[in-house]
Length: 209
Image (cartoon, rainbow, N blue to C red; front, side):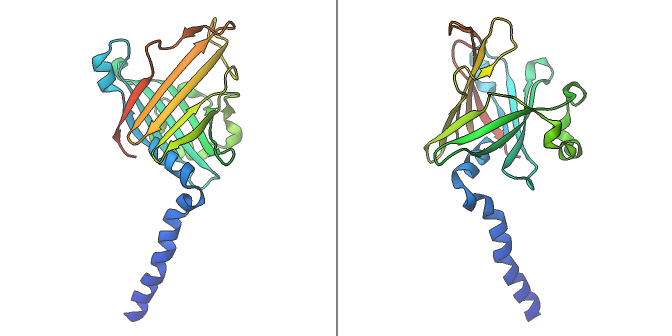
């Protein structure tokens, strides 16, 4: 009995260290990922402003045995029977001492996998070489306070295939239980010609994963 208790006692520090290793390696990066993880909704915003459809944003941690932090991100339109119009795998890492970065990857054969968030086996079988990086559209984050991060793409870097849109500019504000996301398209003259005019989508966390 004493040997059993001793074994359990010795294992506790190991388990605790394992659970907190991500935090101790890079607390700022870890906290950003924690704030982003979960299911979010802009239902309150949609109820008060007809210019914003009711969307859900779900960010799920995947590939926890691979380097860095990986997340499957999906946006659905509730008013169109949950139609999926955005699916990406996103990698979060540190660029330098003050800058965190997210890099998005397109998923192959997207139309065949509209419900892949529930297909963990499919996600786990994907290899990095199977994915297509979205070039120039990295989002660069800075920590503003202990619980607030702001991020944006570089001006002119994220080119667009949308007609009359030369580049996309995305900005995010991430805080405890909230994500503010504003994606705008600009023409060659620098005019805002695509995306919401009034402001960002405002998501509130409704579930933790």
